[in-house]
Amino acid sequence: MCVGFGGAALESFAPDHFRAAAELLAARHRRDLASEPSLSPSFGDPDTCGSLLVQAWEEGARGAVALEGNTVVGYLLARSGDGLRGRHCWTQPQDAACSLGAGPVIMQQLYAHLSGQWLVDGCLHHYTVTPASDLSLWLMLGFAHEQVHAIMALSGTARPTVPPPGVRSARPEDIDALEPLLGLVNAAHAAPPVFAFTDQPMWDILRSGHLELLGDPTVAYWVSENPDGIDGFTVMRPVPDDEASLMKPRGSVELLLAASAPQARGRGVGRRLAEHAWADAVSRGFRTCVTDWRAANPLSSVFWPRRGFRPHAYRLHRILDPRLLTPEHVPGLPPESGTSGRR
Ligand SMILES: CC(C)(COP(=O)(O)OP(=O)(O)OC[C@H]1O[C@@H](n2cnc3c(N)ncnc32)[C@H](O)[C@@H]1OP(=O)(O)O)[C@@H](O)C(=O)NCCC(=O)NCCS
Image (tube, rainbow, N blue to C red; front, side, top):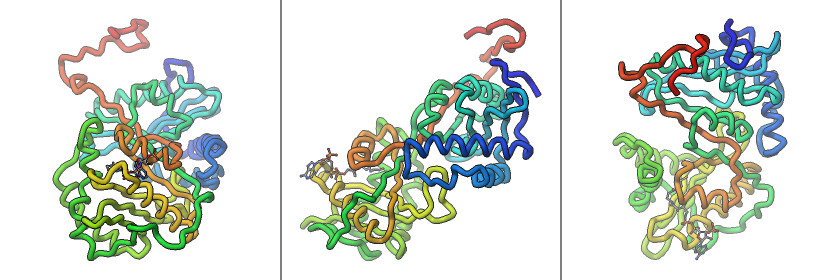
């Protein structure tokens, strides 16, 4: 055990902490539910949250807890990884929570306690997915928005009789006509101001991925047509039970993909497709729709909230300066020495 900079005692997270951490997580989710009632109520139960933490542990999430006396007032876990996102640490929504009264300093202490080792391990990229209620804790640690997760109750949506003119369900035979549109989402993400790294395999899988969606009977793949051909698509997929989470309620439907041809934008194609897709989802018994988009995407970050999606969680990213790993970087004396360091 060690004493953190702000006074709470910190120790490594261990299975002994599952119950206390689950209580914190469930309490946070009950607060999130009060502001976003479409989220799943089941995670307000500490037993359900306890299962999430056991699973996180089994998946390799490790970290620390903060204690005031014998009471756990916060915890932070991360899973390390390598690959498309570089060497990174990832904190899922169930991997961090703190008590309402603990204040931002607890998360700062936990992050300070763990992240030095992450840097030593070469993890320059730190990711977290946080509910909106904890957003400020992470922004104060230097994280920035990458993805917005949003939700919408479909209860007010009218059931359709027939699709509006020009909108129809797509079939696998439409793949060639869809071809010019398949890369539009990738292109929007790769372009400024999003600048998402997009490698060749992400382009290569587009055709097979869309064919799979077109052939899946549980997926609703809607296209819009004009006399020149297909000018937009919207894809709705039921959230599989094993993907139900703090962010995606069991039994919800996900708006997975949508794009309009550049020359058709701003003419109501996206809106007609989305409104029909929701009405159809209601007629199939769905009550909640989830989606997510790149925070810096100027088109989707205006379009989806205007359609009624309410942001409730964010994926955040912090990238440390790569020079921290070079001999040029001089960390100075540790804080316990009483010297404040260079910065
Ligand atoms: C986001 C996207 C799908 C929106 O599609 P779109 O076809 O341009 O959307 P629409 O034309 O329906 O709506 C855009 C706005 O134009 C308005 N509009 C303009 N002319 C219109 C018309 N003749 N009829 C109806 N609406 C019209 C809409 O009302 C809407 O405004 P609002 O949001 O204030 O209501 C599209 O910009 C796109 O493909 N972006 C690139 C790919 C992408 O980023 N996809 C999302 C990934 S998450």
